Image (cartoon, rainbow, N blue to C red; front, side, top):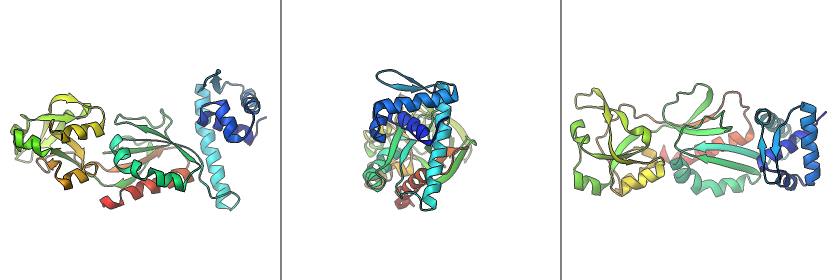
Length: 295
C-alpha cells in the first residue's frame, strides 16, 4: 500500500518534470524517488508516468490522478495550516493562463514582488490570446477577458472593463476620423483573427454586423497594440489595456460607443470541481490588487 510520502513524491516528479529534479527538491536519492513511484504504480495497478532517461510524461490515468491528488494534498496542507500545525508558507505549483496584455502590462511589473512574498510557490504561465480549455489543459486558474460562456467554471470578477475602437493619431491624420459605419468600412484594421466580424451601432442606433477590412491579422494582443501604435489601422482593444497610451495621446478613441458588445470584464476562473486552496487565494488577491488603480 502507498502512503502520503509516495503521493508527495509523485506530485514532485510531475511538477519538476523529472525524477532527478524531484529528488533534488525532496532531498532524496533518485533511486528512492523511482522506488516510491514504482510502489505507487504497483499499488494502483496502473502506469502513471512514462519515463525515459531524459523526461517523464503522464499517462492518461496519471494525468487524472495528478489533478485529483494534487488538490487533495494542497487542501490537507491548508487544513494543517489553519490549525497552526504547518508553517505559513504557500508552496506548490500553480498553473495559470491569461492573455498577453494582462501578463505584460499588469502581472510582469509586479511579479518580482509576488515572488518575494511567496518564494516557495512555483508559477507555470500559459500566455495566449487563444481560448484555453481550463480542464483539458490542466490549468488551475484562468484569467479571461469578456463575457463568460463556459458555465462549468467557478468565476469571480476582478474588474469591469470595456472594449473600444482606437487608432494612432498619425493614422487618423492620413486617413481621416470616421463618423459613420460607411466611412468606417473604408478604413483598414489591425485585429485578432476572430475580431474581423463584429457588431456595431449605426447612426440610428441599430445593430449591424460589420466586416473589418484588414491587410493582416495578428494572433497576439500585445503585437496588435504595437501595430496600432505604428499606424497600421484601427484596433479593437480593452480600455484598461491601453489606458496609458490613451492618456499620452499615442492612441485615440474612434467612434465612441459604436461597439454593441463592448462589456469585457476581467475574470478569475477555476475548474468547477477544484478545491479552494491558499495558493489560488493568494494569487486571486494578487490579481485583484493589480487593477486597483484602474477603478
